[in-house]
Length: 244
Figure 1 (cartoon, rainbow, N blue to C red):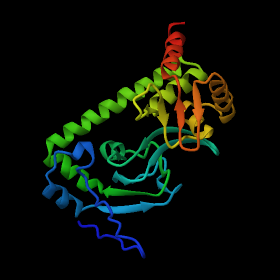
Figure 2 (spheres, rainbow, N blue to C red):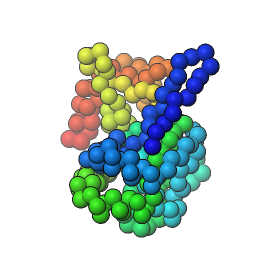
Figure 3 (cartoon, rainbow, N blue to C red):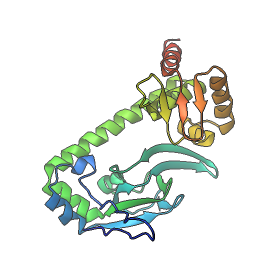
Figure 4 (cartoon, rainbow, N blue to C red):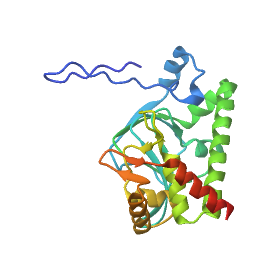
């Protein structure tokens, strides 16, 4: 499956990254030839920002590999109230749970920004698993990691209050800054409503705590990132909360 460069008037050609299954960790053992062969039985889907990929309790069984953009798994409780279960970027697989247990979708999937996914039909996904035990093992390892992460989130909800859940989420979503210092960043920055959905709280509560952290010079927000100025102090506060 070959992607053609898109000509842009007055500019050099922009090359579209061709879709691949091998870019996903569980399919990394496929040869380039196998990758191309399986892709002929799949198709692509392009989504606009905010567009739904699947809805909660949908009975579809397709599996998806993100090729570009960002897809979010959310659980909606009431209108305007939702919890973010996970965010998926290029190379991530999602939707596999319904393809494994044949039950309804356990969450809604929506595009955070303009995104493209490879759609692996249910029958094709099972053919791969039957023919490639190494892929099945990689899938089991992925599911195990997700269960561990879920256990961590459950512990967080059980043992930490709102502000310490916020600290933990800031640390979890951040990455080390490239300048070699101690700071960490979340880029692009999440709005307070999104952080609230991550920790099961309200936007107002998150806004108050983020303002307090800014006054203490522990957090700084710019147009491009949330900067954790002293992540070690946030970790200390979490540890003290767990000990107390």
